[in-house]
Length: 244
Image (cartoon, rainbow, N blue to C red; front, side, top):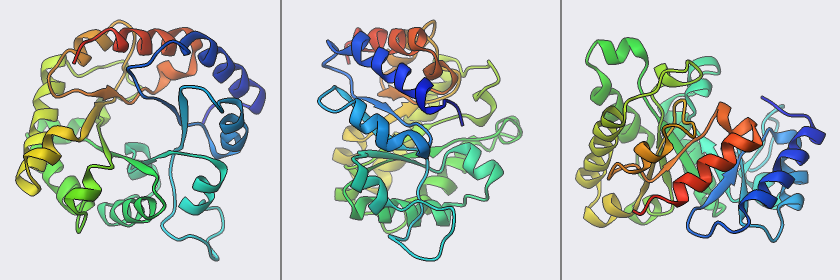
């Protein structure tokens, strides 16, 4: 929940200028709803796509305060974040609601960025993999392999979001390999190998290369560092330099 209209426009104009030569990285910005339509226009013909931070699972109706996938699609969004840890922690998001949102978003040909991850208490109790099993198996209930290929998974350890703490590259790789192996069991090798799994949790220019160099880290879900032109641009440029 950052950026006025003017601030958001200044940010994406600068990003467009700084990143126009980047070809090997998919770049997506997910601003608040109030900025979406304006930033879609500002980024038209650029190499930067726009996504929503959340969505409701109905196309329309008496759901005051909600925004539908149809509305996001209509203004030109290509992506939408689903199940972010803050939505789970503060706003009652559940695996069931995540599942409904994924299905609704796929129906409108938007790409869901589905977030999973454990709290510090769960990690310290040795429950990390159990959390993955629960969130992924229930969140992806009745999602076909073909649909899975149209999605992105984002692993965000809740204990590393906005805290300055970052999972080590080894911790992130261990978690993301488990997620990929779980997809292999649920679906097949093709799905597991193709689906992009991002890491999110205090990603910054100083750690992006080490993180992206891990075999099962395909991208980053950038939080606080995305609010500053210099840090976000540097993260994208450094990520583009990592050969996968």
